[in-house]
Length: 517
Image 1 (cartoon, rainbow, N blue to C red):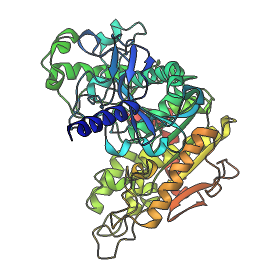
Image 2: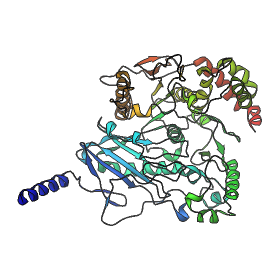
Image 3: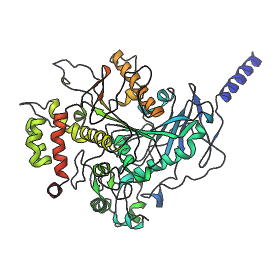
Image 4: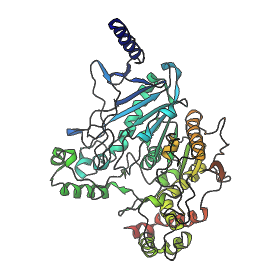
């Protein structure tokens, strides 16, 4: 019996050893991942030096080399933030993860790079809904990259601009993404990926970041396709920001950084760097956590850049959800909605209240749709139209509206698909054992996963087993609807979008700029 037990132990050890993939050489040294259900998986590979100490509020620096083989089987801590991510959080956060179905480095599979959302204030690659195994099994190498969020990721300040060789500050989180994409270019071939076929994708702030990377000259050549879920950043800058008009210019952001420094009880950046990261003030106050137009990472108003063709011309797949507005604290009463609309939109408020009407005693979806379109819908529509006009690259446009038909007496009667609901569909993480998961949910999820990975493979979502998805153009403004079955239709609420477009046009006039100040 003792000999049998020893033999069983020996066999188990051999099997475990056989499941260990060979170490992979990357920038910094050798990494050891694991085998999981036919994939090789690496979690917590560093792609830049820890942004701590004097590197706080600086562009990411080259990764520090290590000796021996580094085990990369656990997610690294997420960036410092207000929430509690599954893997914990740390200022030392610049790590990425890889799921690869390749059996050898020579396979050169397409690469999908995920950028998480969270309002540029939260987010982690370790969130279960972002786990990449289902998409990887469809024949792509899936990478998820971390980036600094909150004030640690986006603080601007005159002192920081002065010490920077480009005389700018802020946008460190975007520079982290660019560093991660440079890592992919240099290293992904070792995992069986094709550095010449990289597609970036993200949702919410991640989708907005995808849009910004598409407009940034610093990201040129680092990717070859882009997918934005509930993203886009085509609104003009504004000193007092609103959803869809989130961007400040560098000088305005620097003033916020000075106020933030005072709030933290520091008299200089040197003092601010000495404060423990988890003791720094957070939230949406001074030095708000959001990218800015700095003239370097983000050269200018993105709408103007696209009008003049000054962006990275790659195929794009862009869309949003039917009831995004329900997830952003919609006004509770018609009066509150009317007052908020007049405050934000000025002389355009009356036209918008007609285009997005409110009920006599409730705030229906039609009113919530103004928030949806101001933050996401108009940006997606503008992106699709501008790129179709100024590029030879293809544009694919979608509208996600997969949700239960809520009973008339339900608190959710009349609601559509909320913000972020699409993510678990794309990553194919719906639970089939959940009684609320329907066959149509699973079919939509399968179709979306197929479209997304087809797009990574071909720069086009079409392929075997899914309905034809026509490219969007001014002459053929066709949208793919994900609702019960994938099917095509017109641009949602096009007439209302045109009314909102009049406001954004005016905002770019001298009168509109002066009014916003």
